[in-house]
Picture 1: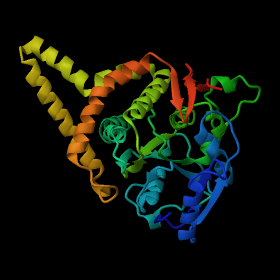
Picture 2: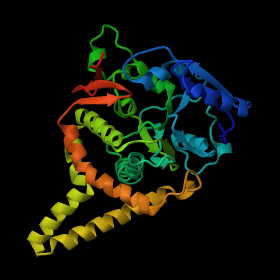
Picture 3: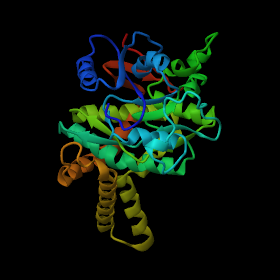
Picture 4: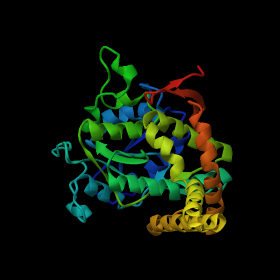
Length: 364
């Protein structure tokens, strides 16, 4: 709510009037009465994805074309909105006063070759320090961040996490549905509704903006702080397995190569190769390899949290290192477990991930 930007509207999208978040939202609106804000209760269902369902009415009611969709667990600093708009209009280094207003309805939607989506790398903040939440934090703040930054730096393909995304409503609403199931209908839905069958709606929207409309993606330099609640190790395993099963249906070749990017696998075949080629001792090589890998991950974590260290509890290196070690050990078993199945638990329900990437509820 406390954003340093001349003019904007805030829409809180809730699923029902009994939503536990409603009390918090009302408190915020009373605390910041000067902010143009409202609550939208969503009753529409266009697919299995509750986030898409939740966004249908806000998409229609939003005053402005430029939308910044942020998950409820995400926190940003006050100046981020101005810098997100800067990245969207491809003006580097300008200040908030010189940025085009988000309310400028005369601004046409981006066209082919222009930036059509701005996103941020998510960084986890943990208050409830359970083992599962600490391992999730170690994963997001090291392995995931490295891969996310690398893939988006090369920019050969779309790779977007939907924690904090900015795009044009007109662009999204012009997209055809990538769902084979919906395409069989006489009048397939266009726009946001066409992404309702997918769990990874964020990635699918980004892919469609990239391929169908030819729009580029830009990563804004601030991090999206993702506040993670208490999580058991079992919940962490289920979460990682769920997204691997989604990815293997969408990008099988890349998913098959994932183990080759993990520290332990790299260390083992590196130790074997150097022993065969040069006669080096395997154990010392592996130990040094793991130490260097940890050092890189600690550096990535430190660099990404440089400007947000005052937010959240102090992050100790010892707890991070222990959680990091657990994450590395669990990586291959989780991948193997995920590759032999296609059913997932998601928000209390059981689904089967189809070959198209769509999800079908199977516990009804």
